Image 1 (cartoon, rainbow, N blue to C red):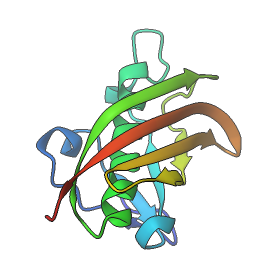
Image 2: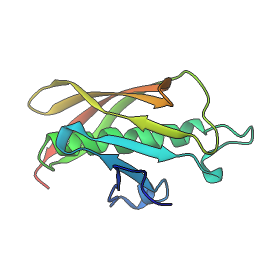
Image 3: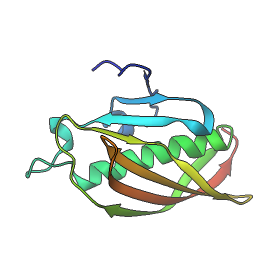
Image 4: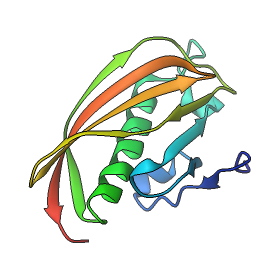
Length: 134
């Protein structure tokens, strides 16, 4: 799959996340927007985006934002809360712009509102522990 106009493919290093992609991005630093086009391998038996797949995409996108916001320090997910609002199907493009809600010396609080064609389908809020320099 090629990148949509204005987007480039996100370079994924985590072996598990590589199976999710390709993922595309636009912007830089803590202002990136991420896209995932839903394929056959992303859906459940009912033909809608699998919840675990959506949570993986959330962890990937919010993790990329955490990495950006810490100048590429090692970070790990401490918790993630999810709200599934509407289904997505094969061919849909899911878009998210992660947002920093709060930062302490050792923690980041992030949120992502995931949309398909401007319609909110899922939200995720996460807390990330900053472990140190990469």
